[in-house]
Structures are given as C-alpha cells and as structure tokens.
Image (cartoon, rainbow, N blue to C red; front, side, top):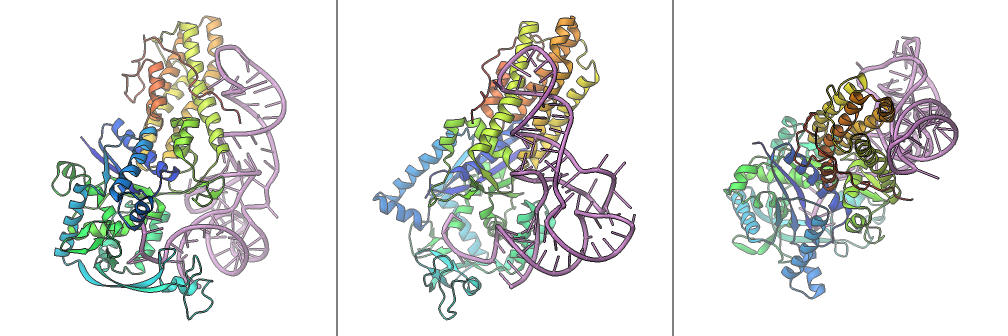
Length: 511
RNA sequence: GGCGGAGUAGCUCAGUUGGUUAGAGCAAACGGCUCAUACCCGUUGUGUCGACAGUUCGAAUCUGUCCUCCGCUACCA
C-alpha cells in the first residue's frame, strides 16, 4: 500500500488559533482525507511549538509554571481542530520527552559530522521589538537619516550591537548541494513564485546559522553544554521526524520522507533551506515537497492583533457551519496566492455554490425520485439513452481523474471548480430532459434513466467533496442510501434502494 | 538600492508558442420553466486588455521607456 505523510507546521502556542492556522490545518486535512479515500496509508501530523523566550515570558506574566501554561494553550488548539473536523494521526509537542530526545540526537549527529562549531554571533538588535537587523536593512531604512547611529527600521528607536557566544551550523557548506537538489527536483518547492525567491536567496550566499541561545532557558539544552538551549526553529523543524520516533521507530521507517510539508508562505525559507540542510547533514532523505500557501486579509485589511480584526475560525464555524467554512477557504482563492476574507464573499459562496447549485440539485433530484418512483432508485435498461446522458456520464467519469490531478498539485480551488462544473451540467441536464414532461408523457424508461443518472452523479459528487466537507458528504451519501458504496466510478450499484430525503443541506442565507 | 511578480468587464480572475467578433464565475437586467431552497435554465451588456512609443500584414500576447501596487533581500515565531 502506498504511504502518504503530510504535515502542517507546529504552531507557536503564544497565540490562540486564528484563521491562518485553521487554513493550513484544513488544507492539509483535506489532502490527507483525499489520500485516505484513494487507499493511501496516510499519516497526517500537526502539533505545537512550545519553546522560546516569548512562551516563558507569557507564562511568567500569567504567574503560572511554563509547562502548565503550554498545556493550557495546547488544549485550545486541540479543541479547535476537533471542532473543525481535523482528522490528524499525530499531534507532536516540542515539550514532549520523545521530541527532546530526537532533537539532542540530531544535534549530536551534526556535531559528529563536523557541521556545528562554537563561535560568536554579532548583530544589531532592537530590544523593544526583539528583532535583529542586518547592515543593509539599517542603511536603507528611511528612518536612519543620521548615518552614524542606526535606529530600528520598524520603531525608530536605536538598535544595539550585540555579541553572544553561540553554536553555529554550517549552512554555507551545503549551499551547492542544496542548489543541485532544487535543480534536480523542480517540484520540491511550490508555488514557483516562492521558489524563485528562495533560489535568489540561496544564490546570494548562505551564512552559517546561529542555532543556540543563552538568554533564556525554556528550550532543549545542548548536550554537554547546558548553558545553551537550542534555537527554537532548529528545535521546531525536527518535529517532523521526532513525531515518527526517528531514527529507528516503526513510523519513521514507514512514513519518512514526508510527501508534503504544508505551511504559510512566511516560513518557507526555514523549510526549504534550513531543514533540507539539516537533513543533508545527518544523512537523511529530504521531504518530497514543500508548499507555501498565501495569506488572508480580512475585509481588505491585513489581519493583526492590534487592529483587532483577527478572525476566529471557531466562531465562524458556529455561525455558518464547519463545512461551509472549510469549503470557502479552499474554494475562494487558489492555494498559494493571497486572498481576502469577507462576510459578503463567504455568504455569496454559500448561497451560490452550496445552496443554489449543490443543495438544490440534491433536493430537487430526491424530490423527483420520490414523486415519480416513490423514492425507489430506478434501474434503467439503458441509462445512456441520448447524447445529453452520455455527456453527463462521461463528464462525471472524466472529472474523477481531473480532480485527482488537481488534488495532487494541491490545487484545491481548481479541484472544487471541476466538481462544480459537473453540478452545473447536472442542473442543466434536468432542465433539458425535463423529467416532469417525461412523466406526463409516460416515457418511463427515459425518466428512469434521467433520475438514475442524477442520483449516481450526486453519489460521485458526495464522495469527491467529502474531503472538503466531511459531514455534507456523509449526509448526501446517507440520503442516497449509498453510505457503503464508495466506488469512485459510475455504476448501477444504487439501483433498487430507497432514498431518504432530508431537509435542504444549505438553507439560503439572507444578506 | 538589488532581484522578482502583477496591473484584462461592476467584483474575482483565465487568456497556451503574437492571428479571425478578448473569455469564465459572481453581481445586474430581461425571458422561460415548475422537480426544487424567490431555486434552476436561457439571453444580454459596457472593456482605449496600466500609459506612451516601436517591431509586424497582424499584439492583451514581443521590445523599450514610464506610472501604480506587491513580494523577497537571514536568525520573534
């Protein structure tokens, strides 16, 4: 059986889950569910990054023990994913013993390889912003009018030169090897626009990376030198293998390398430069693909805590339903580019796509099945009795393959629009075949074929949308009495069963 | 400053290697239908294809200049 290992980043617990986290997690969940549907042995990993200075400070501010603080935050994420119907196989936390063990092992291996050395880090630091700056940035910043004294490009306050003992990781040593990997694996990093950015970053020359800190203690200590804790990113990236019990656990042997790491565009560089080089250093295969998706703005504005326009996915799911939210996020914008979230566009999608197109198609078809056949699914002699029927059947068969291509390319929006194309054609098919006329004229054979075709198209549609909208998919299948008929091919298995029409799936929303 | 991307209908976008009347979805208007959630089906429109100049028989598509917006340019995550 083919395996499929997919991950989200581990989220920093210094924040409650917002729509950005939910987006990544839902997208990965959709792909994981789809692959399971296709018979893959899937491992879907998500988790939390719980180390670092900010976490420590947040706990202190709250007056609780750090571990207790992160345990509480972790509950919030678990609850959120549960609500959003995320079906993950693993949940890794960087404070877990198994993770810390692998991090240290990783570090030792790199040390043995001669890829880690002790040195001094020098840089410009803005204390209030907690950010480091390079000379180039400082020089170009319009705020640095007085060239003699650098100020922070963000806040305008003076920056301080800092010097610190640290362990360095020899990124520079692997520069050429990494470039070669990009050349030989054109699909390693997607979308392409991001790939170009990363390539130009690598080509400008990689500097060795400082991978330890002495300014705080909430982290994984460096083996043999516990004044230093391991830099949080370094710690965090290792989650992808520690969760599988690297380096000799069963899961590690079965699932690594990852088939795809899914993430927001802001952390691509860590995954497409640092992580691959870490793996090269310890001699482990690289992930097959790294995908950086876009960001959401909200009502046209950048989402930020200070603006207070952060969208809470749970509240949204409670208002509109989990499935419509999942659908909207993946349908509205191509995965990989930025998009705008607004109530108006969510409602528009809900009404146009879910209520009018899909929900109404199911409802009207079931009504006709009840009305003309007492709900019993017909078994037509020749279901492809005319060109329209042949086209409908052919399109739905073709769509199964087309959707597969889109899914494998993480083109979620494209996959959905292909599915909705079939829904549209099915609605047109009803109009043109006019079952009500066939019924009046007593053309039973044709009527049987039309209703059967529609039900079968709906069954296939239900399966194809189920990774996106798990509850809706199940509900449709149960109304079609097809909960146990999961074949993704057009057939006659439905015939003879009695449909169980329910309430409309998506009652229209008033604006 | 350097590198890269984008600017096409009211909105969101598609437009392969330059070739006949520039497309889709949504929104709007009108018509049809009645199985259906005021739903569905059909018809309809406006676009100086960012600006200017050039190459060409012919350019949204190639070249140049300019304007606007955005991304990346290393250590908070």
